[in-house]
Image (cartoon, rainbow, N blue to C red):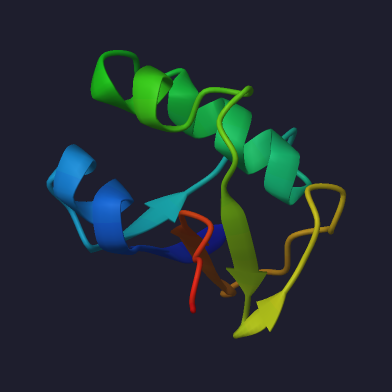
Amino acid sequence: MKLELRFFASLREALGVSQETITIPAQVKTIADLRDHLTQRGGLWSDVLAEGKVLRCALNHQMVDPKTPLQPGAEVAFFPPVTGG
């Protein structure tokens, strides 16, 4: 399945990439699976997307939780939590 990935704010800066198109293996079925799959790239990817790090995620512009199933051709966006005042 192909996905469009987007990385924002400090994630974009740390990874050095703002977007990419990837094809994921069949066993990657949820947002959590995708995040784990991306950490398997090693290096910065495993540090920036590590399981203990708090990240927000959107699927096709809708906020979702890690158990959300992926959809073919979807846009998945990762970004750090945002605070405001």
